[in-house]
Length: 239
Length: 247
Image 1 (spheres, rainbow over the protein chains, first blue to last red):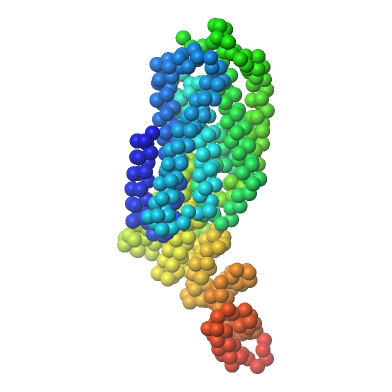
Image 2: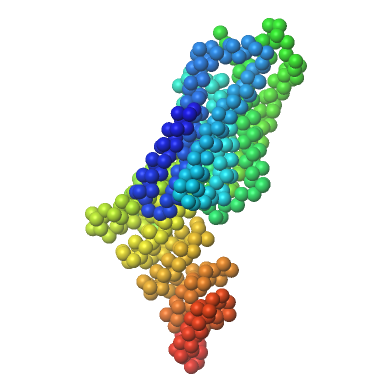
């Protein structure tokens, strides 16, 4: 985890330095935009690497047998894994955020935009959804490669929700429309959490009503995914 | 039910756990519907910004569609925007492109601003190059108007638009409505109001210019501005035709 964090910090600083030399415009703005991307990217790297490594230890090397031999239900086991994974992920994200704030405020002499903290909270919520999804896929998946690929595509396609909605408004055959609708409602709507792209948007108004909806969406989607994982884990036979 | 329970390790909440597991599929369906409703509701405030189709269409369509796909697929639209902005700067810096007078500059700036609408430098840099170097005033104006729509509080863009209109074009019919709208805002910067008054004078709308300078004289917070307003009024009264009507 420390390696991932350190590498993310070095890459972030290097990229920001390079872009600030090549680009024209507000250097601190570029740095803040890159910083927000770096914060989320480091969380995603930790998640993907964590999924790959723990699949090998838990499922392939049968470490899960030890856990389930204890007086712990399978639901508790899954919930514990999700929370543990999430706390590690949150630690990396908060660490990166501290680096970004330090560099912008103390080195750059600038100010952190008002929406930065909301954006950070949204990234943490997004990570909660993705952690739950990733670990559920780990429970369902039969190979490490499959789990990583499913998680990878879910993350990428989750950002395309807006485009899918745009497609749904077009004149399409009922079959294609039906398939798109299923995809639209099954994939996590990651654009909901995308405040990164609008952190400097003066027209964006983030009220309690929106916060409430985002929080409810996070927990209801995560709960659905958790239930799928739990039911699957209950039915799974370990040999 | 957990297998460990069957092998003799007692679970305190075994009964509760069994019931919860039985109700899990029903809860799953309910919460799935609820998250779908929330997803629909939240979409209205998240996806507000769309890509605009270029009005000049001089850019290769592949560039535009590839960048859009990359931006949406990876979810890092602003990052793609910053990287593309460097390419735009390089395009403008490349002397070879001066052969066709940087024909794609407006389209590139427009696409960069679609990807990163709040990055004000795209509009200032692009509009300055288009208006002052390439003398493509209409494109500079379009870019700045787009920038003002995305960044209503960026006064720099309003000044630049006013400056371009005032100094480099005869298209006052386009510039004046924009300036009037901005000048009528409660937070309109004084310099913008001055530019509008000077533009009125330039097109011969002396009565409107006098009205505006009177307003500036009344509301001015500094003596310098009051003196300037009084001087302008004196000058305008001297220039105004005797019938006092706008030409």
